[in-house]
Image (tube, rainbow, N blue to C red):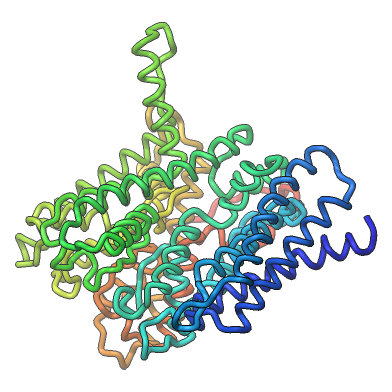
Amino acid sequence: MGAISRLCHHLLHPLTSMVALASALAIIGWYGQITDPLHYFTVANGLLFGLQRFWVYWKDKMGRKEKRRLGLQTIVSGIIFASALWVLFERAGEDGDWSIASHLTVLLLIVVLGFLSMIHHQGRMTAKAFHPGLVLISSFIALVVVGGLLLKMPLCTVPGTTISWLHAFFTSTSAVCVTGLAVENTATYFSLTGQWIILILIQIGGLGIMTLTFFAAVVLFEGLSLHDRLLLGRMISENRLARIGKTLSFIVIFTFTLEALGAVILYFSFSSIEVTSERLFHAVFHAISAFCNAGFSTLPDGLASKALSANYVWQMTIMFLIVAGGLGALVCEDLVEWLVAKVKRMRHPEMLRPRLRIHTRLVLMMTSGLIVFGAATIYLTEFIFWDGPSNGGTWMTALFHSVTARTAGFNTVPMSEIGILTSQVLILLMMIGGSPGGTAGGIRTTVFGVGFARIWSLLKNSQRAMIVGNRKIPEKTGDLALGVLVLSFTWLAINFVVLQVFERNSGFTETALLFELVSAFGTVGLSLDATPHLTDQGKMLLIVNMFVGRIGLLTVITALISRDTCPPSGKPEEEIILT
C-alpha cells in the first residue's frame, strides 16, 4: 500500500466521518437550517468521501472476502458522491434555504459507513486484556458524556430555555442507565430533537453499547473471536460460549420485535390524539421506554395524563413490556425455546420432555410472587388504610404500581398524593428490582431470593444444601448473594446519611429522601417530586447511584479491586465466637 493509499485509508476516512458527524449535529442541534458554510461543507465532504473510497477500492490489494465487503461500501459511496453532486446543484427554496433532508442524507450515510468501519476493527480494541467490568463501565461513562454534550445543544430544549451542565448530565445518566428520574419535564422542557436524543440514549443504554457493537460485528463481518466471546459472556451473563452469538442475536431481535409490537398496540389505543405523526412518536417512545424499564414519558403528566385516563390497553401493554424487559434476555430465550420444544413434542411424543433452567424458574417464581405481593400490599396500604388516587380502578392502580416499582418508573397517579405506607412498600419493591441480564436494576430478584434462602439456612444451622426445583444450589452462590445483600444495604445506608447531610436545609422528610435514593440506585425513576428540588450535591449523588445501580454494585467493586492470586494459606484454623 503506497503513501497516498495509506493517507486515504487511515486519515481521510475517519476525518471525513468526524466532519460529517459534526456538520449533522450542527444542523440538528445548533442551527436548524442549512447555512452557506454547512452547505459547502456537506458537498465537499460527500465528494471527498466518495473519491476516497473509490481510490481505496481501486488501489489496495486485498483478498476476495475483503474486496466483497469493500465493494458494498463503494456502492454506497457512489450514492453519497451522486447525492453530494445533487446537493451542489440543488436550488434553494423560496426562503433562500436549502433542503435539510438532502444534506442530512449525505452526512448520515458518511457517518454510518465510518461507524461500520470502526466496528470492523473493534477486535483490535477488545483484544486488549481489559477486565469485562472496566469495559462495561467505560462504555457507559462514554455514552453518558456523549449524551450530556448532545443534550446541551441549544435546539434540544424549547425556545427560551437553556439547560445547565448538571441537568444535562443528570438527564443523560438517567436515560443511559434507564432510570427515569428527571430534573426537567421531558414533555415540556425538551424539544422534539431533545426527546429523540433521550430516546436513542434509552435504547442504547437498555441494550448496551457493547452489545450493539458486537451484534453488528456478528451480522456484518466475520463474527466474534474467543476473547470477544469471553468478554461478552460476562456482560450478558451467558457462560455457554458456544451460544454467545445466538444469545446476542436473540437479545437484539427480541428487543426490537417486542418494542415494535408494543408501539403498534399503543398507537391504535391512543385515539385522543388525531395527528398521526405525534401519536406515532408517543407510541414508539413509550414502547421503548417501557421495555427498557426507563420510565421516561413524552406526556406532561406521564401516564397520569388525562388523555390516558382509565386506558386499560395502555396500562396492560406498558406492564407487559416492563415485565418482559425486566425478566432478562436469558430467561426470555429459555422460555421461547421451551415453548417451541413443547409444540414440537406435541407432534413427536417420543422427544425428551423440555425443561426450564433453574435460573428461569427462580426468576419467574420471584417475579410473579413479588407482583402479587406488591399489588395486594399496595391495595391494602393505599385504598384500605388511605384514601389514595386511582386510575382505572383501585386494583388496576395497585397492580400497575406493583409492576412499575421494580425498576420501570411509570406512574398512573400523582406520586405526591400517595400514602406514607405505600411509599415505604414501593421502597422495598424498588430495592429488590428486576432480574439479571435484563434492563432492570436493584439488587435483583435472584440475589434477593437466594440470599434470604442462605440466611434461613444459616439460622436453622442446616447441613443440607439449598434445593430449588430438584436442583442443588452451590453454597458459594448463596454466600455471594448474601454478600451482595450486605454490600447493597451498606452502600444505601452510607449514601442515605450523605444525602441527609446535603439536604439538611431542604425540608424533605427522611422517607422522601430515601425514596429518591432507592429509586436512583434501583434505576426505577419513581419520584415523590423531590428530585428537581434537591441541591446540586444531592443531584450528583443520585447520578452516582443511578450509574452504580445500572452497572451493578458487585461489578463495580470487582472491576476496581484486583483479584487475589495468592496461594491458599497453610495456617491452622481456629473458631471465633459470634453469638
